[in-house]
View (cartoon, rainbow, N blue to C red):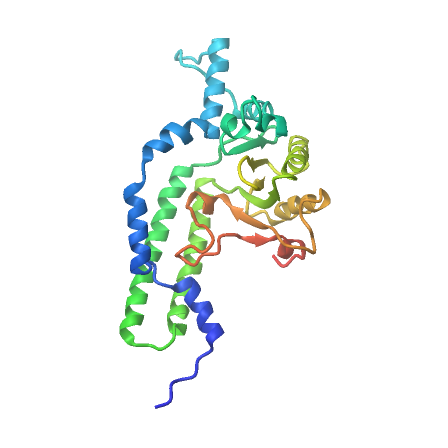
Length: 301
C-alpha cells in the first residue's frame, strides 16, 4: 500500500513547537540531574545580595538612618526609589579601567546588570508575585491540555501532526491572551527592546542610552549586561500595549544608530514573559517576543 503523501516542511514546522513537553528519556534524565544538583544556597549568598532591588533597599535604608526620618509609628520611611537608583547605578562607570587592574570590577560591584531610571519613574512595577501566581496557573493548565491532546493524538495512530496543531493553536493563543490580561490586572505592563552589542561597543552605547533616558527622550528605564563578549542592552517602555510609544522608542534607537532600520531586526519582549520565564524555544510554543523592530517601524502592528 502506498504511503500517504506529506509535506516535509509543513510537518517540520509542526514538530518544532509541538514536540513532547517532557522530551526524550535522555533529556528527562539530564533535567532530573540538574534539579538534583541545584544548590539554592548559591543564589542567596552570591546573587541575591547584588540584585537591584536589594541594593536600592540598602541604599534607602542607609540614607534614612542617617537622616533619622520616621513615620507616625516611629518606623523608618523609605524614599522613592528613583533618585537612589540613578545615583547607585551611575556612580559605577562603564570604562575599561573599572574592569581591570586593582579597581573593583563592575560585575562584582553591581552584579550582572547596571540600570538607569528616567526621572520620576518608580523602580518597581505592579504586583509581580500576583502575576507569577496567576500566569503560572495559566501555563500549567495549557500544559495539561497539551499533554492530553498529544496523548490522544499518539493513540489515534495519525500519520501527521496537522490535526494536533489545529487543536493546539487556539489553546495556545488563548493562553497568550490570558497571560497578557493577567499582567495588566497585576500592573506588570512594561516591556523592553533588546539590543545585543559587542564588548567593544557597549560602553559608548550605554553612555548614550543613559543620557537619553535621564533626559526623558528614550524609555522609562534601561539596563545593560556587565559580563560576556556579547552584552544585552534593554530599553524599557511604560506599557507593552502602547504601540505608539513602543514605536517611538525604537525609532529613537534607530536615530541613535543602535538599531538598523533595514538590517537585522531587534525584538521587543514584555516583562510578564520574562517573569514567567517564557524564553525562545519554550515547551509551550509561545513566541517569546511580541514585536520585531521591522514590523513596528513598517507599521505592520
